[in-house]
Amino acid sequence: QVQFVQSGAEVNKPGASVKVSCKASGYTFTRYTIHWVRQAPGQRLEWMGWIHAGNGATEYSQKFQGRVTITRDTFASTAYMELSRLRSEDTAMYYCARDTSGYFVFDYWGQGTLVTVSS
Amino acid sequence: EIVMTQSPATLSVSPGERATLSCRASQSVGSNLAWYQQKPGQAPRLLIYGASTRATGIPARFSGSGSGTEFTLTISSLLSEDFAVYYCHQYHSGTTFGPGTKVDIK
Image 1 (cartoon, rainbow over the protein chains, first blue to last red):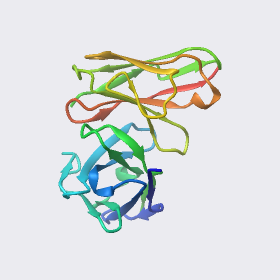
Image 2: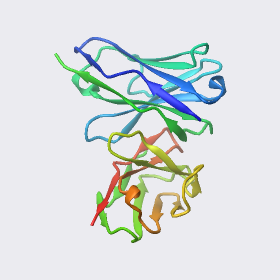
Image 3: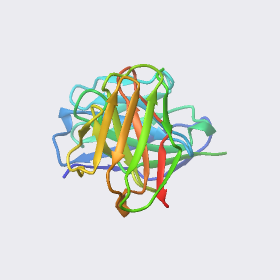
Image 4: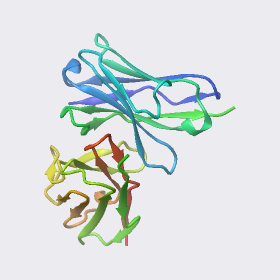
């Protein structure tokens, strides 16, 4: 069955970077895109960007442009999201999600990774 | 950016009753709208896409309708596992989510 397992919770200081992983299983990893969506406490879900797991093409939300980098390792069937220059407002649950439609419809999600930014 | 709003913020319903959730877009999104269910401590789960198409494995008690700027998610007869937060999500222009409607037990 399709499954995404994300890396564990992180605590980081302001100004640092964080890299979250998302390991896929149960389907051909390189066929579809992986998106990253975050949810700050009490806030709505917020899209950050995507990567096509096959050709490596990426697109980022303007809000995060310059701070977020999404990569993938096809041999490990794993996608990564790195967010730099962290600030307290980046404290959130970060999710990876698969899109098989090409239209930003997310049919399977990872369990989430809590990133806390605190000095 | 298209802004999504949802109403009500909280809906109190008894098991077995019907629940009707509303979602409004600040401009037309056509039928490019999805609904997700999220339970505490869990990731969102896709219920509906294309405004009215149920995702794989979603029970028939969940139905979606609407187009343009007004959308509805209906749960025909609530079961205990349906008490959760529901988000609408437009993917017509960029992608944005609504603030959610919490369905709790009356």
